[in-house]
Length: 418
Image (tube, rainbow, N blue to C red; front, side, top):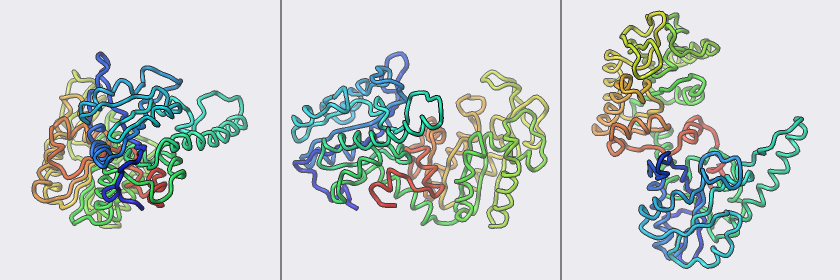
């Protein structure tokens, strides 16, 4: 596998899959969070500094037609230019870039229009079908068209660089299929994907003990695979967020009208049994901040998590749980955090998540390796202005989860081979 840091792009055209699916301000249309753009800068700058030219390709949102101005990448050109410090040319159709690509000079940058304007990118038909047979035939035909789509993108460049970790778990035209049209010496990961893989492999394969995993979020079903994979690696498992109450109910607790997956009670109990058998210490919240309604102005009360009053729902962890969780994190040498402790978007229910963010930052200061992944956890770290106080903040929510679950990611396999 070719390494980007030792590759010379001089005189070469590099097509780079970036993840510029950035949020836009609904009123102004301006980029409201440029984290993903900044994440791609080292790779782009390496190509330009070597004397190559960069062809950038990305998706944005889930457009249902071609074109769809709402999801045009033209909206983010100024944000890319201000971060990169150079002019960015634009092609308004990713399949019709031949002339602009041919005219590119060393040091120049071309951004292609949203890849998902073409259904070939995702390889999923947008039309409705009367029968399963018709749908299957359409999918098969589209898969062949996807190859041609990827081949066309590949024809623009001498080198393919994948630096979009957030889409690496998808077998899309620009993330996996395109790699087939480059030989081993002409395809590679960018600096961002390399750093993602290094951070995750360190947690999965080289974690110093005690290793603590903090799993939050709404549903047990969303985290079952990663929890099972981590049970062979961690010493401590902290559980928070809405999925707390599936575990609490499985243990016979009273949960009021808190979120609960009733069809996953046996699964939750089974996870606790597996953890015990493997010697993993599981920490469930013992107290919670409850609300009488799911809104920012709701009335609140505090109770034991297994004694939630009727008509109330748990929306955050409370002081005793915060104290215990923070002590466990403080004594850890490796920490993985995925998922909030409560509905932190509402200030009334943000205390627990903020406390965990600060505890993870303090553990980092004490020498622990800390990895933050998943959109909500990243948002919580950023909200508390602690992104530079932890070891690594992953850019890929779903991709990170699947990698940590032990799955093979198509975008990674296409270059690394596994």
